[in-house]
Length: 173
Image (cartoon, rainbow, N blue to C red):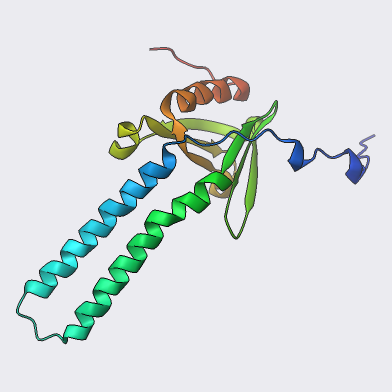
């Protein structure tokens, strides 16, 4: 006969006992440079529009420059708050990831749900020797997990480890 005994809440593992791994220390700088590049591109666009002979009130451009400056400063400062609050842990049966400054999220993906694991990197990631580790799960796409800002060698090692734990056949080059 099937039994499903109740587990006392005191016996559940505590989230406080997890040894969180921090993201790469250079990840903050990488995000700040990305924000600086985007802000510079927007500023060039505003400057080009300002130099064109358009019948636009000067106050529009003053407002545009204030918006570009304030959003750029915010985008450069935000990683200093957000990145230290992110972390991951590899446990015996799952991967756990936390993130969020105001709205905090903790996601656990069991290895037996993982169907595919990949590492990706943008040109800026490669400049900082970083990569993102992405886990694709069985079922819905809502169960997928992406951890950005990891050292590239750690991300690749974890990719192979998770594939092994998930029972996948790993082809070596």
